[in-house]
Structures are given as structure tokens and as C-alpha cells.
Length: 112
Image (cartoon, rainbow, N blue to C red):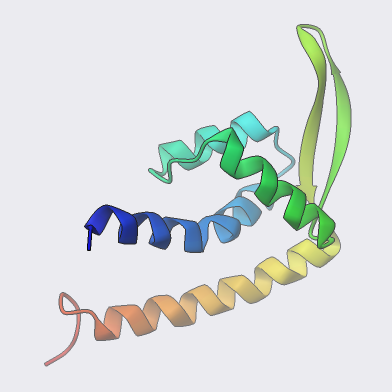
């Protein structure tokens, strides 16, 4: 078993949460989302991001608007919907609980 596969799965598991959290700070263009994720060392490519954005939009968690661009085709800017904000609030709570549980059970942090 390769550690890289497990690390990739761990990143994928939190990717939607991170995307929603980024969009909670204001509407974003997809390349800006990718930049933020890369800065956080959550390496993502467009081929991964766009299907996630579509799935989140189809679930009613995101909306978008088109904006004309001076240097190319119109740009699609994404934002959280009210439902998306409520969903993110629930994920925040779940993340806090999960993070606490992991800290309590991992060998680096478990109290012995």
C-alpha cells in the first residue's frame, strides 16, 4: 500500500468542505479557488474542481453569475446560497467533532 494514495484520499475527503469555506468568504472565479487550494497544499486541477462545483451547484449549495471579460470569454463566478451556508455550518460542526476525535486517537496526540 502506498502512502501517496492514502494522502490523496484524505485530501479528497475534505475538498468539498474547503471549497465551500472559500466561497463563504465571497464569490470566486474557479481559478482563484484553485490558487487558494494550492496555497493550502490541497493540490487541485480544473478537471477535479469543475465537477465538484457542478455537483455542489446541482445540490443547491452554490449559485453562479456570468461576468463579461475583457480578455476572453465570460467568466463564471460562484457563491454560496443560503442552503449552502447552512450546509457549511453543519460541516463546520462535524469538522470540529472529527478533528477532536482524530486528535484524541492518533498516536502523536493520544493521551496514554
